[in-house]
Length: 519
Image 1 (cartoon, rainbow, N blue to C red):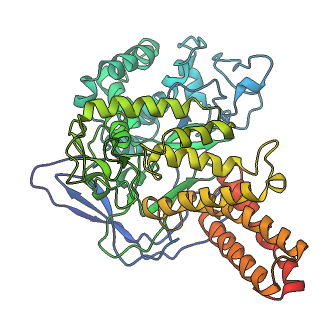
Image 2: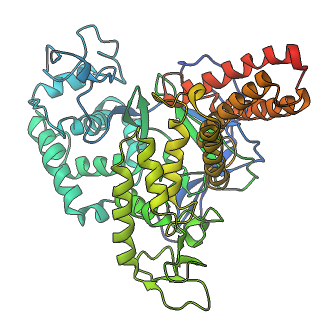
């Protein structure tokens, strides 16, 4: 669905299974030399996509590749072009001595490097005056792609094989015209020879918009373009996950067992959002219409992330009559209640308003999220994505912020955190199954209140040793699963730090076995 390099009537299979064994290398090395267990297929509907060439267990590495290019995301804050550190932390504005574009220091580790501020880029940018603005850094990654044309023609050819959706993007003036003024015209004016055409620059912009992956650096994101990774098919219930290490290496693993012949899938939309919002995002940012099983099912495969409660009978669900058609009516599914119907357009306006309401809540406002849940409990189902979003925030706030630290929580508040985590985990098991970061994060949050309650019960002798041992056995199981889900996340990321905390908590549990025995 994401890549649609079509030729009518073509059904091609390009085998990429090597016989080389997996070589374990230290983090930060070049692409791992692994046995590829997928093939590349082509269809008129999906374009090129990856298919498992054998049965693959959960957690197995499928791909480890270096990027073609990396650099600032669209509308990025001011960051260093060499190492991507946030320059807002500097009191004075740092600039490259030669081109006057943003760098952190004259001795930046990324200066002159292929994934940083290269000499070729610096030479080119001397002809592009830097003016600090929201769109100033938008030109960088397209320029880095274009420089491949003369520096590494084989990589340039690979980049051009990616989908750009130019014809669709031309009909979206806000995208095409913004690229024209903030990227295309700057590059055309700056080049001393006519190396890059206007058509090429627009095409590269589209390739990046459709195929680039977000990379987390500290508390902000940059983007990277990778070989073969762009061939991952989209599905709103993925069977793979990917991450980047500190050297931008892209690694993809299975999150669930995958059968031979099964499509390898990732999600280019946030899995905890409802169908209407996911469809909007995919259409506006990836330029395709998703028709996966989850999108076609009004109940979203049992997750009920889009399910509403009928405001008339209050006994049944209010669902879209055709979820993949955003204009389709929404109706009550109670056969004795035909009173309520709402057009898809009106429902979108309503959902957008509620989305803005929950997004406007301060990120640390426990009371604000709780009040939102109470306010809409008679209209939004308990697992509607707006409710789950608020509950996921609360999962991470209870026990983490001032006046609500984990050991300060009352028994009632601890049980509230447990309930919230269990509700989110129940949904995550459906839409992000297996060894997913989402499940790993929620399971870590769930272990904490269970651990505190067990500790309090032990100290007050309210529970027998056997009962406490069983409680700690559950805590241990959650931490083991959390570690498996998060073990590959870089320590520099939020998810990586949670994974490390889970390991430390698991180690700390051993002290309990001295007085309770093994559990």
